[in-house]
Length: 140
Length: 466
Image (cartoon, rainbow over all chains, first blue to last red; front, side, top):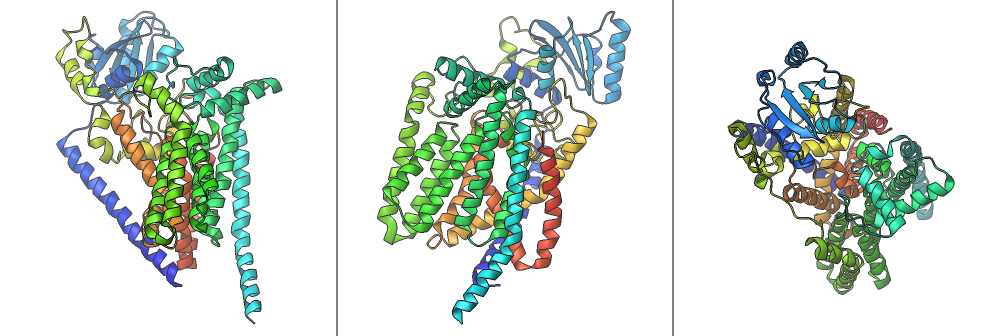
């Protein structure tokens, strides 16, 4: 190995140590910060997304008795003139239960009720694709 | 005797270069095929801001005006002029979806950038074919290049112009010929980049810093280097000046064309008729946006960055978004995200694979970046052109951090991997440098590194096919 190669190898080894140190420092800093300041909730992120990206004002909590049982919270918003109640479940089972509860008390829910992963959407009228897409964009 | 020895060495070098050169050609061919396929397969409306981008291009070539009514009104018209022309050409040819011609233009620009990457390697690291090959291998397979190359988006054009500027600057610094004509051409290219996207400014910064550093390190060439620096700076700014004046006079911001709205002023609970909103609602309204918090910049996103690297589950964070958008599909614009393509468990698993395969190349590229930065400073006098390579990614990262902090959004939308696209060729060289340095140290180490790297890059290349 000649001189220039040796210098490059030296710099590369130092750089690998620097990368490892940065990664370790970041993880430690993050853990400390996480303990001091808890993460934003899904509900917070959804409300801000609707406000910031869609210009939609959300009302928290949604106010109906079924959505009030959602473990991660609920909200109400109007997308393109169609009001939607969003219930945020903590698990797939809870989301399924919320959907069942809505079906048990609601009449014609075709095109109005949708369960998507941990979120349950109940639209006042049949939701259009663009209305649904707006909510998907802010689903966490 | 000496002549024979030199010939023998030359023949051996040629022999040693055969495999990496052939591999580089294969990479170029694969890239060309993939971008061609993607241009006509990836839906025109699926990319970032695709609809306003297409509308901008149409308005520009049909009405000859900047569409101030569109949300991308602050984007310079450079790309839209070219892509609008390409769409017109497509209409003449009878192409069913003319926006595909804009995407094809981006595909061609991506291949041209790859060729410039090879040229840059030859200037900065002559006689190191494996470095060239590894750099091109990364550039060809990294999803951010393939995804952006398939979109109707200005970024591939600004990446091409940035790489061209770096090639011209590297040649100038290496040959120590700071001719006025060459400086004017370099200034024109740098200025043209700013007429495509504001990130073109990074290139101006990198070129000017490298020229200034060269002037400091080489007293004998100080006058000519400083003269070239002034010419590049003046021409580079003059070319884009009309656009900056337009944004300043119309929107009071010459670079971004808009002012940032601090999130904490968004008072959701205080809109008319909502003053009696319940307490949790008011608490939410008072919270700052993610990128206004320290967490945004230090959160590594664990464990979701591995288990669920997509925006539904991974909370916004600067590094997790940058990483998962570079190697995967954080925002859902490539493999998922529309009503037709909702996220499923199998897609999420594929995104997880992308997170995993990106780790090794990213660590190597990062190590190469730091090593090259140190080496460039150590050899500033003898090889000032080296400085250009680490400068581009470092300036790009600083720009991305500034943008994320100055323009906060709820979902980290102002952090996207494609913002760093102009720096990807330089980052690929950092990667190639690290791989080649390891390979020159030990053949066994080279094989031990090359096998997993090749697997990672092949998996990523497959992800980048629309």
